[in-house]
Length: 414
Image 1: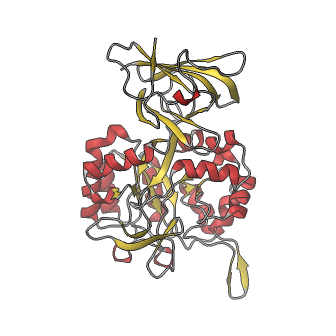
Image 2: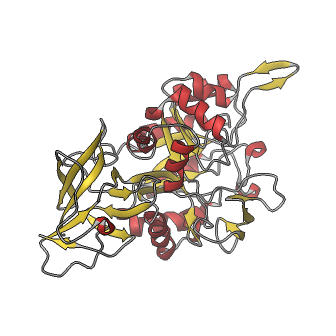
């Protein structure tokens, strides 16, 4: 594993943006971040166009030097909720699909992700989880989204598979597959609170989603261990009326419970700019994770696609930068990538770049319990790094100290 020096970058640390600094990498980890006086300069013999050191350095290079040429150097993006991309879905249950999805999203700055399922039968879940075990080193755990959901809030989840929590099912899956690190459930269902206690005991993040719960239900659920809201605003109630009386819903519960963390699909369509701004104003960047919720259509042309397994999934269409059910009655996931999310939070939600990056890096790392090794540029942490320009266009992606994507194939050596 070659050492890397990233020079002349605007380095985004957990505390500030260093206007000019070098990042030293060895053994797949960050060794040191060195501030430099004065504006960024270029490597001798290489101009600003050489900002993206690629993988074609000579075999005898001891150190790969990447000239960021004044671009931003950021922690790699962490996506807690992603179903697919590049024509593949994790529910396809193949190693090829898992790796192709990761490759597609790496080109857009994602260095770490939590592969996510959809509501499915146990056999299909087992097949996907078995595949995950073969490639687990590339990810930080599986996220099971469903199948324990409220039918009224199913959205694009397949109604054939929606059911109440089944202890025999979820206990056997968790015992068999240690890669399960997160499970999204409607907390008002019979047996859901008991399930949360079991998830908490096993160190698995209990999240609530696709729910008819009111504020009081979410408060009880939070006390039992449901500490995270899956795609806030989507497939849940806001203020609602019953017998002429108004009741606060799950959305309001997310805002009123200070300790509750939330995730948002910041594609600018699932949540328009005013709602993005509202979530940020109330929760703040330390409680918000940006997610793509991307399906297989991410990175693909608009038109027809499949949500879930390619042979037995639900038909969907991609139009206007989002996926929908064919009758356009509901969204069917997104086709966003992480760079688009960060860009939107700056341009549509009026967030500072460091705060937008925090919501895509250190906050999701903390939510998933991996902040000790990922999510920030600090010595000793994994060298998961992206370099992007002022418009969040990805130039270079580094995962574990290896360049996995470079917009331009240039290099220097020392």
